[in-house]
Structure formats: C-alpha cells, structure tokens
Image (cartoon, rainbow, N blue to C red):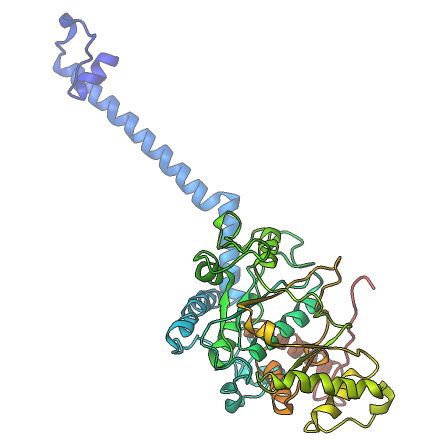
Length: 441
C-alpha cells in the first residue's frame, strides 16, 4: 500500500490517519522486499535499453561502422583534421606580423616537398611524380618595390568568382599576385557556397584554406601577409576605421557581425563595396593592369608614354608566333607582346590607388565585373625581374594542398598499374593518355 511504502522509506504521509501509523515488523519487511524488487526491475530495464541503443540501434551501428571504415581505409584523415585546426591557429598567429614585425611560429606544413604518409598514400616514391614546383629560397625574401616602405597597414579584399572552381582558382591567383605586388595585406573571404560544390548532402561551405596552404604561403614570403575576413573586420571595421564613401561616416558591418563563415555573403559584399576603393574599370578585356617598377610618380607617365608608342603601331598576335620577345627585353617590347591583338589601354596602379586604405575587387556578372582570366595575361610589370618572380611564385606556392595532391597521386598510380598489367612487356612504365571531358558542354 502507499502507506507501507512511505513507512519503509522512513516517512509518513501528512494525510494518513493517526490510528493507522503503527505497522507491524512483518509488514515492514515485506514492503522493503517489494521496494527492492521494483528498484531491481527498473535498473535491469534501464540497463537493457542503454545496451540496446548503444550496441544494437541501427544509427549507432552505422556510426561505429563508419568509424571502423575510416580507421581501416582512410588512415590519416584524423591527422588531417588535426592539421587543419593547427593551420587555423597558425593563421591567427600570422596577424601578429602586422603589429610586431616578427614572423609567428611556422605552420605545420612544408610547401617544398610532398609526403602522403598522413593522407592515405601513395608512397613518397610514387607521390614525387606530382611535384612540379621548385623550392627557391631567395624568392621568399622578395618584396614588391611598390608600397614596401609604407608605415600604414593597407588591405586588399575581394569577392570569389561565381563560376566553377577553375574560374574561382584563376580569379584567386590574380588577387594574391596583386596583393603581393601592392604590398597589401590579403584578406581572405569567409567560407561560403561555391558553384557546383554546394550540391548534394555533403559539405556546403568552403574556404580557400580547404584547397590551398595559404597560411604557409604567407608565412614563407616576406612580402605577403594573409589574414581572415573576421580578423580584418575586428581590426578595422569594428574600431571605426572604415568610412562610407558617400556620407563619410564611420560604417560598421551589417549587424556588427565579424564572422561570416557559412552565412549569405551578399550583405557583406554590399558593405565592403560601400567602404572601400572599388576599381570597376579593372577588368580583363578592357585594359592591361600595369605595375611600375617602384612607387615613384615619374613611372606613371613613363607607362602612359610606353602605351602611346605601342598604340602608334599596334601589334597583332601573328607578329610573335614562334618569335617571343626575350624575358629580359625592354618594358616597351614586353608591353607590345602583352597587348598584341587585345587591349589598347592600361590600368595603372597609380597614386590614388596606392593611398587607399582598402582596395576591394568585386565580382558581379551583371555588371560584367569578373576576373575571368589568367594573372599572366592580365598583369604587366615594368620590371622584368618582378614579372618572372610572379610566375615562379604562383608555380611554386599556389598549389593544391597535400591531401588533394596525394589523392591525385593515388589515381595516377592506379592507372599506371592498370596500364602495366594490360601490357607488361610493351608498357613497363604504365604510360597512359587522358582526356579532359567538360561536363555539360
């Protein structure tokens, strides 16, 4: 009874009649037995439910199987995730360069080599076939002659191209090269959806750090600093250092948000366009972007005069077929080859742009503002040494991350193995031909 249960627990209900509060010892013992039985049943039931959901529930069985598969077949992926976390920490440390002038501790990656031991193989001997880049230590110390002596920190921000990943890559390469040439801190866009990569049930938002070792590039090069958009907004926008171009008032990010990872970037893009210098005429097909050999004002007129001389006898492409100009030719000769059959105007990185605290390059297909071009076809350097450096810089450092390179190496190794097995005698090297088939065309 309810009364006996309360007595066994050492308590009496307040509404129990006084005459019934005396309970015999035998009744008390049976109540204790009953309570013990109930508690035991509850314990067994709860334990059974726990074991069922832990061991037999299909969802947990699936999770367990996935973990086993990753451990058995995707070895090193846990280490990859750990490395990514370390990269993010290194990227934050890199901002200390701007304030102290000292390099932060090096990130965990070495751009010069390629080891796939932490990325599921193949062996280093097979992976080395993927290496097309070179390690040139002297390039790491190269600093652009433009803006190198500026005491005030200046920035370059940009919007990723809205097309497929190859278009995104080309645009990104151009932005990084321009940031180095301008001696501006490069602000990387937040993670966002990318065309064709956001489909399906997998990952929806990506940053460039998912594909490149950008924190290592910034660490290795004296002339390039890389920070995140969040760091930029906290440092400049939230401290009132960005001003609306129309009103002149200090302008803050929409809703004072600084972390835009995985969020619709449209409000952020509109904000950046309002508070930065945004050169709409810098587009491929309308001009060739020209960088003088240093930031002296006399070079602006020199470039203009060179372009006038070239336009006086405008060259065609046929003039240079099988007759390229030497890489160390005069600036005028190289300019003639660069514009041949294409554009007749220069977009010069002049004093106005050099003085701007933030230069922002937007992407808007409706306004026909896209950097849908290769950097070497869009940028011209008056100094031939800087021109060659820029091409080496992209070749040697703007390469895909090891995880991607190693995945490609596994594919190549598998195809070579298949080719050898098909013709062991005549094709001992496993040579093969490949086709690039574009989807939807």
